[in-house]
Amino acid sequence: MNDTLTLKGETLQSRLLIGTGKFANIETMIAAVKASGTDLVTVALRRFNKAQAEDDLYGPLAQLEKVRLMPNTSGAMNAKEAIRAAMLGRELSKSRFIKLEIHPNPHHLLPDPIETYEAAVELAKQDFLILPYIPADPVLAKRLEDIGCAAVMPLGAAIGTGKGLSTAEMIRIIIRDAKVPVIVDAGLRAPSEAAHALEMGCEAVLVNSAIAAADNPEAMAAAFKTGVESGRAAWKAGLMPTSEAAVASSPLTSFLSRDD
Amino acid sequence: MQIILNGESHLLEGDISLLALLETLEVEKKHTALMLNGAVIPATNWNEYTLKENDEVEMMVFVGGG
Image (tube, rainbow over all chains, first blue to last red; front, side):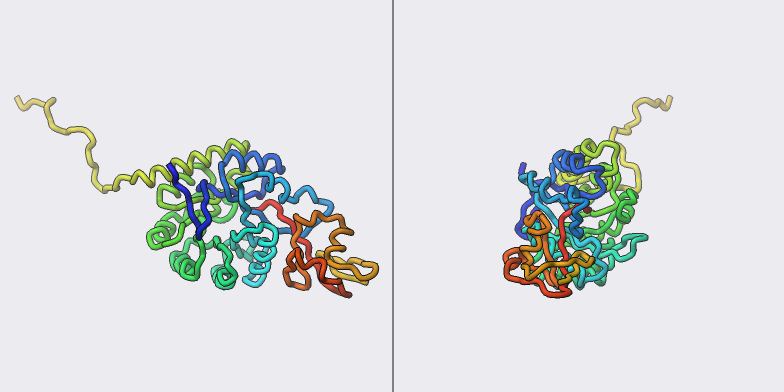
C-alpha cells in the first residue's frame, strides 16, 4: 500500500527522517541511514578544514541514490544568519529542503521562536521548502503554517536529551489544528516513542542522537523504522476511544453463582 | 595581497578569481559553497570574480548534523 508523505509537492516514501550528526564515523552513519529506510537526511554546514577533510559528507551521501539532503541552519544565532546558512546549504544540496533551526542558547538549545518566524517569512519568499524546528507551541505552529512552511517540527524534548515525548499534550493540540504535517524533531530515545508520535497523528519523526548514540546504530535505525511503520499503521487503523470506567470485554452474565 | 579566508589571514600572489583560489587550495569544488563578504556566490559565478585586498571568503562544506 502506498502511504507516502508529501511536503509541498515533494514526496517521501519514509516517515523517518534521519540526522547525520554524532556518529562515530561515516561508515556507521551510512549503515544506519540505509537500515532506517529514510529518503531525507539532515546535514550541517561547517567551514572547510583541510585537516578534517574526511568529515565532508557530500561524497558519501551522494552515493545513496534515493536519499535527499536537507541542510540545517545549525549555528545560526538569529534570522539573518539562518537565511545565509539556508542559501549556502541550497548551493550544495541543490534542493529546496531546509531545516530551519535557530537556538542561540547552548545550555538548552531551545529554538528562538521570534528569529525562527522572521527567517521563515524571508525563506518562504525565496521558495524554500521550510521545515522549522520549534518549541511545541500551537500558536507559533499555526503562524508558521500560515506563512507557507511545508511542515512544523515541534520538539519532543531538548536536543540530545533522550527524554522522549515530554511535550505530548501540546503536540496533540498542534496536530488537531495543523493543515501541514507535524513532525516531531528532537528528544526521542526509543522506537516506542516514535511509534507513539505516529499513533498520535504526527506525520513523521526526525531522529539523530537516539540512533547515533545507540550501542549499535545500524540496528537501532532498523528498530526506529519498524516503530515508525507500526505507529503509522496504528494511526490509520484508528485507536479505540479511552474510557474512565471499565468496559468488559467478556460477558459478565452470572451463571456460576447460585442463589440457592 | 591579503584576504580573510575562513576567518584567518591568507596571502595571495597576483590577481586570482574565486575559482582559482579553490583550485590552488585543492578543494573539492562540487562539495563547497562560497560566501564572499557575507553574500553567497553561486558556483557559476566563481570565475567572474577577482579577489580584492581584505575580501572575506568563507568556504563551507556539509558535515554531520541533526
